[in-house]
Amino acid sequence: MDDFFTSWSEAAMTSIGFFWMALWAFVLGYIISSLIQVLVTKERMQKVMGKDGPRSVALGTFFGFLSSSCSFAALATTRSIFQKGAGLAPTMAFMLASTNLVIELGIVIAVFLGWQFVVGEYVGGIMLILVTWILIRITRPRRLEAQARRNVGEPDGGGQQVGKDWKEKITSLQGWKEIGQTYVMEWQMVWKDVLIGFTVAGIISAFVPDAFFQTLFIGSGGENNANPGFLSVLAQTIVGPVAAFFTFIGSMGNIPLAAVLFGQGVTFAGVMAFIFSDLIVLPVLRINATYYGWRMALYLLGLMFVGIVSVSLILHYTLAFMGLLPDFASVTAPGDREFFKVNYQLFLNIGFLILTGVMFWFWKLSQQGHHGHEHHHDHGGASLTDKVLKVLVVIAVVWLFGGLTLSLL
Image: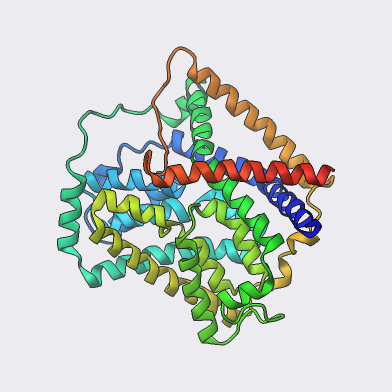
């Protein structure tokens, strides 16, 4: 029993320590994301994105990058773009870019995993868009696309207000109110995923033995063996998305867990496949089925699964050929980390917490007198997914509080 309480305390402190490591990165990423979303107008998206072709896919990728958001928020925006007439390929490019070419995600990956994984995230994200486009052109799902358009229906009425120039926004109080409001909404979109993801990462690092990872991810755990045989790499690359499918958390919450996987000897390809799989988790499949119908949802699932596995393998063997595969030793084991000490990270966190306070002050100003434009993010509505997330949040809070209390005692 004493061993359980010791592991519980270690798990809670690891979860909190992981979050402390990533705090400044989260704040920096969401401030940049909020600036882009407010200062760069989106009204032209539907006008310039066409049905298909290199230009349409490139524009979908670019607009997706500007609209970077969590997986669940990206689904609603993607549905709107598809509903307004954009082709399937540029629509998919938008969705993949808005979740993989994400500034804050790259910063957090750099904190936990290193530069190779950051390069893999951005280069692989672009490759994933290209592979998906090629697969769409090969399979030509015209009937599925037509059925999906019938399912989503006609776009809602109502005109769009013409946005101000970015210079006017950044020099006005109203502009900063919008930035503060967007910043708060970014946190509202991801805090459940982040809380659950970091809690799970701490539990796995403290309780799950190495033998489990070696069994689940075939060929993992070999000392200094970052590039085992092809069949082992392929198996791990397939297991990565399958493991991610049954999670309820997006990529931001999965990054500390990805660091745990890599620290346990899972290959670069397996970890990248796990990170890329934020759009094929079970709740996303259900939401896509609600929007487009089950046949299209399953088609998109298969499309992204093939793309993720192939791109992860290409990235892995490209780095292996160049002799640049990351070493397992580059990720410090959670139990060996000293999370809380006086260093650059402490001062970065203090500085960015002050910036967070400023953003919340602008948000409070934006709420005075009116509620502004509402932005809802509920992982698909008052559904089973949302209820499960709420239960998991309560469990995570109780778990962390209990573990922290044990540490203090």
